[in-house]
Length: 390
Image 1 (cartoon, rainbow, N blue to C red):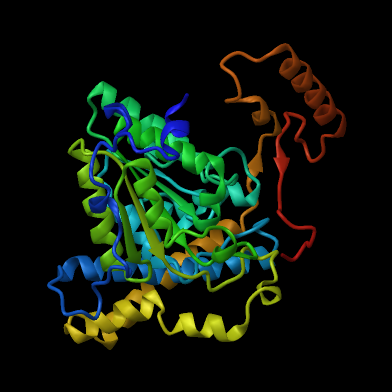
Image 2 (cartoon, helix red, strand yellow):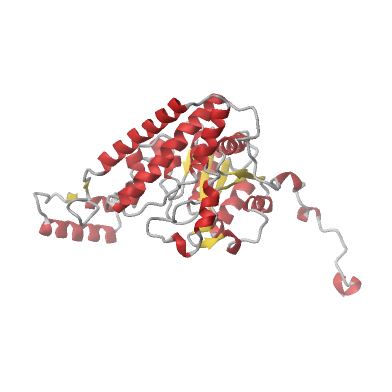
């Protein structure tokens, strides 16, 4: 007769190996998103000004990149307007030796990390590979498939720890990515291995047209951390100072060998999912306008003015710097790049397979047969548009 048959219920204490290793309470996030701006907290004025400059440039970058899609210079652009604070804070929370693993929407984080603004758009333009050297920049390629960059971040962080390197990986993902298996696998491996990695979820309300309520029944996405044995933090994603502090603490915690953290930044995607999306089909204008009242650029400007760290001249200076960046981006993106179609076969395998060799020969023959304008070497001109006046 089994124990259940004898007692009708299971009352025996489980073996020690089944018991929780620690109290889950310290891992749970706060009930409300953590905030700093507008609270009177003591903050570093220089840091606030640096964050402000980046969010202003980030806003202008989003506007210019969106305009480039309408001109045929970009195939697609996933704007992060409204999310500039979390993007910038993610980049600035890292040290030079650390790694950033962005998603496709995290162009501003890559630019704030120091990458060439044009190179960051290469993938979205349809140019070769990622457009920059991940090893030199310590920024992984912008990840288009959802959440696949998260296990990569864990693997790199775990390898760095085994080698004794002082490296932390910060992996960015949207709320939609938390519904992917890669998200859960990455968190589980990171916690078991105690890998020095920080997961930043930018909860902007929608996975394309699917609202968060149809993705999860959890109290918050930050609560998912406790299930894997790591702390979850909930922060106002439009408060650049708060996001920077929370991420900075999580990064240094990982650096000390205390394991991974999950941070949820609650924000809002003001623009559509991409320029190919019609957001009016699944949300109303009143909701968007309500979030505009919590705009990250305005929040930073209000805070700096209240601390007498910013005046009208400072606002103009930041705007002029952002416009100079946009002008340079526009001019360089309007130059037709020279592409090498044969590069399709580079960086796939260390040694080409027989199938790749066959495909390379086929493409070379086609290029030679259709070469125009003296480009028989396989070089192609790419305008990004069928319009001659784009």
